[in-house]
Amino acid sequence: MTGYTATVTVRLKHGVLDPEAETTQQALERLGFELEDLRAADRFEVDLEAKSADAASERASEMAERLLANPTIHDYDVEVAER
Amino acid sequence: MTGYTATVTVRLKHGVLDPEAETTQQALERLGFELEDLRAADRFEVDLEAKSADAASERASEMAERLLANPTIHDYDVEVAER
Image (cartoon, rainbow over all chains, first blue to last red; front, side, top):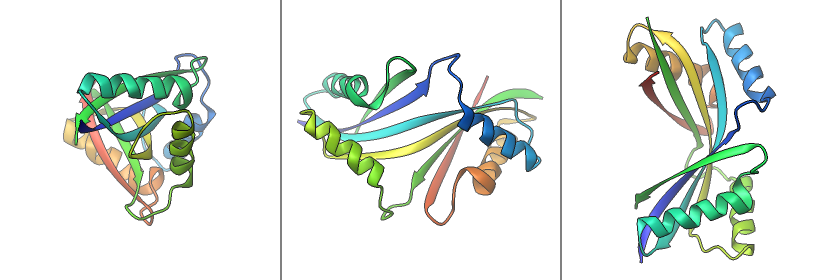
């Protein structure tokens, strides 16, 4: 077994309204920053032991599907690195 | 001017308690997943126009310092990619 860190990024699907990101963008603009768009996402870094990077990635995807993401409104991606 | 996407990742500093991450980890364990640790972070993807990748990165760092991160409890890093 090897130690891996799986990074799961959970984003709102295209077309789902994100009032938090909109408010953040407006606050930055009010501070004088110029930007075209801002998207917010959640990032989970999961340390786990697995037999291979593929196994770690599969387990992290299952975690996303069961708990970390809501498939109705979220997309997610998983990146795995050895610790 | 070129279009860039700056990704700002905002993490709690080492030692700052994160009850949300702890609860998420416990929920995953209750679902039968084995994991050693889980850390949560916020990720902001900012689309902006700048003269160079360095200029875009500098502007995104300033956004993090002024609004996106709280320097008392957060660390942040910035990655820039051309759009």
